[in-house]
Image (tube, rainbow, N blue to C red):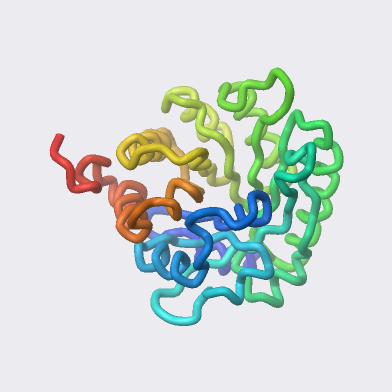
Length: 261
């Protein structure tokens, strides 16, 4: 597993064992989304803000990764679907592990929606990706969510089920929803042997977002995998800097934002 170990060091902070990851794969699903219109600039912003890694689809790697400035880990996303599809939760594989290696990826990621009509297909594809990742020594981030009719996407039972499925599949890193409170989320992270990150979800206020992330880290979370709540800020660089202070330095959210209690 030495290859995985070396690559994971490029996307995880060695001192804290945590990571701030900024997914930027939203354009595939949503189109020309605000915040991702100038990829070169936004990649530079989150990099200089201190983010540990970004998530891109293969065609976007050339739009700014590692051209200049501070280096940042690269995670190539292998799954895709669009909002034009009647079922946008139906994720299919659009890139291979081998392609990601040729692009210089430090890790790859896949998306699974438990409870969706096409769950079985996504799980089957995940099994094949895990096999390729183990063969090539490539870390795998599994983004897995409870999504389906009648499913509460934040219930501890559903989120815990997602985390367990990802771990049993062979994930090296897991991204899922936050349960809403540190006690229930702490039980989930304690029962899992690999790092668990929370998703950022829909854009919310600066302080509200940082407080949620702070609670998750204090509950044993490995950090955050936050997209719109980072790149759609008025000043993405400053917000990511505050985010990194919370995750890696243990600074309280109010202080990280420069606000008085």
